[in-house]
Amino acid sequence: MKTVIFSIILMCVTSAAFSQQQKFTVSLNTGLFREDFNWSIAGNMDGKNPNVLSELIWKNLEGIQYNINSSYFLSSKIALNASFTYGRISEGKVNDSDYLEDNRKQSVFDESFLSNKGYHQSANFNVLMKRDLTRKIAVTALFGYDNLVQKLYLLEDPNHPTDENLNSYYKNSWDGLQIGFDVRYSIGKVSFSGEARAGYYKYNAIANWNLVPNFKKPISFEHKANAYKYGGSLHVSYLITRQLEINSGLDCTYGASLAGRDYAYFTDERTATTKFNGAELKSSFVELGLSFNF
Image 1 (cartoon, rainbow, N blue to C red):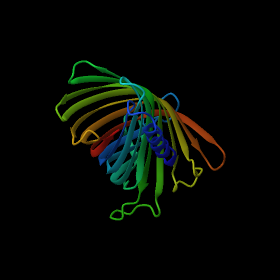
Image 2: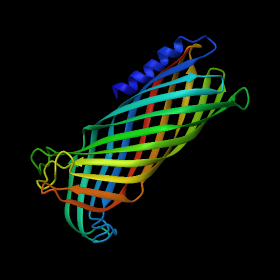
Image 3: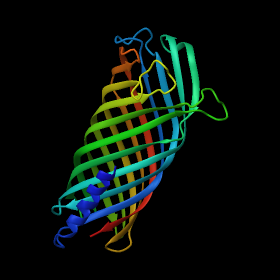
Image 4: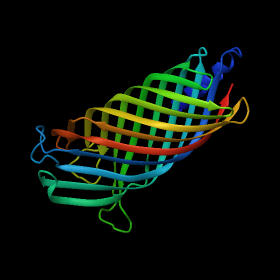
């Protein structure tokens, strides 16, 4: 995280040394986020016995997030962009279920736990290509690298104690390339913009199930799959001065993995492999911040 932030700041400082014809922008934003996330595995590699053996569902994960975004303009039409976002989870719940028969029948375990800690962070680096359609309308295309990491917990609910010292976690990573475009419409000092983006990713996850004695620690099992993610955002900004702009925005993202593999590691050195049915992510956030134009 520190490396990404330092890289963005370094890019800003370096670009300041260039002539006034070359510009850069820095945006600092904060806001509230909400996320839902789930995954499941089957009983074997054929996706049977049963088709859903174990399922984890996180709901209403909420907290505050922070974002720094910087663009360096190589010309009036081409820019390099870097962005980093970090959000800390302060509220949320998770349900853990196990089944013996297909289609989630004959439940043998069904418990809910707290998930009021953890985080998500994302970093992306893009090339931006801008075209002015009119004096008021501009379209920007983007292409680049995108990475998202989540660390989600299962914690004991003090109001419904079930397991002492429950402190298990599931950490997933979405790593890939994205494309997108942004349309901006300006009226005087006010601008409205909308962005759409999509990408293809490698999905990897590790888990530490701290209360299952026959699972290895700190990596109890892993998930590997291909995935996709898409989203969009709406922004409104107001130009206070030529160098200072206030902005607000709403962003929504959906992501899902394809089927993959689950690797479970046991203390007796055995490794069990089964079908990873997939993971699903839904997230949204609202933000408010300032942009500095140089």
